[in-house]
Length: 176
Image 1: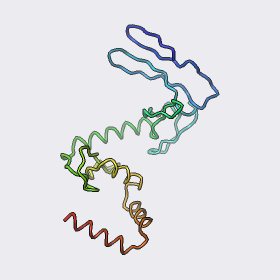
Image 2: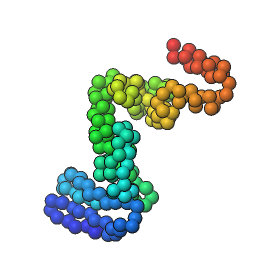
Image 3: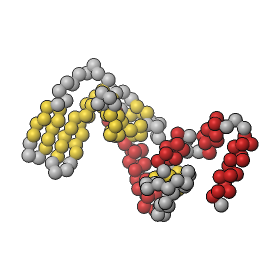
Image 4: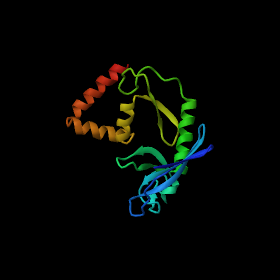
């Protein structure tokens, strides 16, 4: 990296820019005490079309936001949603948090006491479902955030449906 310093801005430029690699360069700006312009290596070709998983339209890489994570080669990744869908999602999250009740002391799924709970909302209708710990939130997300996915997981773990029903009744009685 070659650094060029000015009173108002710092520019960081990668030393090797090659067209043959499976990445492209994106110019980003950060503000703070001084304006910082950074050139970031982004995974994938710039002209390759990517599909937004929300609106299902195809866009070039410029239409997606950097997500902050990098692979072992130092290439940054992009969010899987286009900038328009990403902005809407951020606004929706803020609205849910603004209208939410205070969080309880325990996760509403596993009932364990946790210091930090996540606002869990139903995507698309902006209704708060509850407050979950990180593990439960990620787990439910991997099961598709729906009952069918969770029940398929339960059937995988326990083949006897009667035992699943018996366990569900025990959990229900704990909550009452």
